[in-house]
Structure formats: C-alpha cells, structure tokens
Image (cartoon, rainbow, N blue to C red; front, side, top):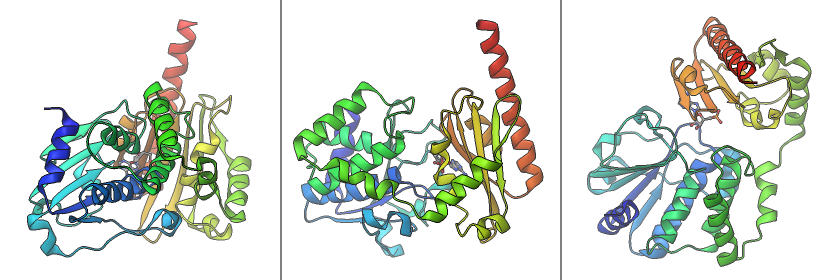
Length: 322
Ligand code: AMP
C-alpha cells in the first residue's frame, strides 16, 4: 500500500491521537504539529487530537500546545514529526502508546515507530505533510496552510537550501492557489526580532574567528550572552544569516547554556558534510545543518578541530578538481 494511504488508514482507525516532535522546537516542527492536528480534526471532527511538547514564547504566534496525562497513551496513536531518533522526541513515556508513526525528513538514524516514513529529499516535514494531504482525503484549511507555508519557508531558509526542489515549489504553488493565503504577511512573525538580537548579530560579525581553512566560529559565554541581553538560543536562531560569506564554508556558533548545564553548538556548511561530526558530540541533524550539545569547552575545541579538518580536506579536493 502507498505509505500515505497507510498513514491515513491508521489515523482513521484511532479515536485518540497525540502528535509530538523534537526537543528544541523550530518552526518546521511546531508548524507541522499544529497543522497536522487541525487537518486531522477537519477530516475527523470527533477524534481527540493533541499536539504536545515544551512550548516556547518564540512560536506562540503559531498556536498553543496541549497537555496530556499518562492515561491517554495506552489506547492512543502517537505521531512523531521531524525527529529521526527516539532520544530527541519531546514526550515522556513514548513506549506506552498503542501504536506509532514517524514522519520525518532527516537522514535515517533509527527505527522506533511501527510505521515510518522518512524522505531525506523533502525540504521539510511541512512539505511532507502537504504532500500527504494532496494524496489522501485529509482536508486542508486556511490556517493550517499558513502554518505549513511558514514551516517550509523557515526550513528551506526561504527556498535556498539544497533540498528545495521543483516539488517544494509545486506544492507551495498549489497551496497558495487553493487557499489564497496572504503569504507575504506571514514573514513578519517568522523574521521579526528585538533590537538586542541585532546587537548580538553585530557582536558576532565583529568577533567571528575565521580559520585559513574556511571555518568560522564564535564562542558565546554566559557572561557575553547576559551582557547583550539575549538568551542561549539567540545565536543559534540567526545562524542562517551568516550564509554566503566568501571566506567561510563551515560556520559554528557556540552558546553556553548555564540553566541546562550544556554548551549548544549550531553548525552550517556550504560544502562539507558535518552531521557525522555533530553525531560524535551528542548531536546530529542534516548533512549541512546540524547541532550538538556538549558539556565542556575542551570538547568544543575538539569539535572545532574536526570541523576545521573537514574544511581543509574539502578545499584540497576542490583545488585538485579545478
Ligand atoms: P539547529 O542547529 O537547531 O537549527 O538544528 C539543525 C538540525 O540539527 C536540525 O535538524 C536539528 O533537529 C538537528 N539538531 C540540532 N541539535 C541536535 C542534537 N543535539 N542532536 C541531534 N540533532 C540535532
């Protein structure tokens, strides 16, 4: 059976459905969860559907999340979105659900759901949800269309990432045509930021260290983060703004998070594959957009050395081919 039909049939067969996504929520994860919840309710109004996970004020404009009790799991279907590995699913008691489905666009890490659909070629989980709507009887509404648009725009960094395809444009074209959403107004919520973040961006621009191999990095200690009046997630959220710098092929922002006693590393690449390095340091992600969580600045230095080496190798292979 076609995988979308199988997912649709499974959704249809459950009265209670819980939708979860990865820790450290981003717009694709948040938008796909809230949109899928609404789309299931549009199609099956009598079902109970919950979108769960730790909320963040940053994405409040997308909608609110639900709380569930432990009782729900035993006869509910769990749908995990945008998450390739079990440890990163933002839900407790994941093993208590009666059945589970995974829908994801990350490289495969492990099987942990009964039905799994992952498509690394898709630009975003929102793109997969949209494709599924157009290939099943799921009913799209205007608000969900807006969310899906925002998720796709965000995860493709405005249609610039490598897995943005003709299919992405096809689906978005159809979405706008069918629902007539006012898509230009949707950028406001996605890209509006406080002045403190612009000051942080200026600080990063001024202090970014660039190696001769093309690695750029900045270490933001808790003191600097506090002084600039931002938080430990702020730098990571603006990493895409530092794309297209001639001298830089890989860039990493390191932010100390004293509240959680970790150091967050957010990485991007315009060439070398970096998720293999991220996975060695309690991280993972896409080939060229990855993250890691380490505990010491000594480990940060090891990680940066590995990134620098991969830049060096990449440049030497490129030079040989030219
Ligand atoms: P971010 O740096 O948060 O924009 O994340 C880039 C990609 O890496 C996303 O697909 C994340 O899900 C993934 N990612 C970020 N941090 C981690 C982590 N600690 N472990 C696994 N994947 C991660």
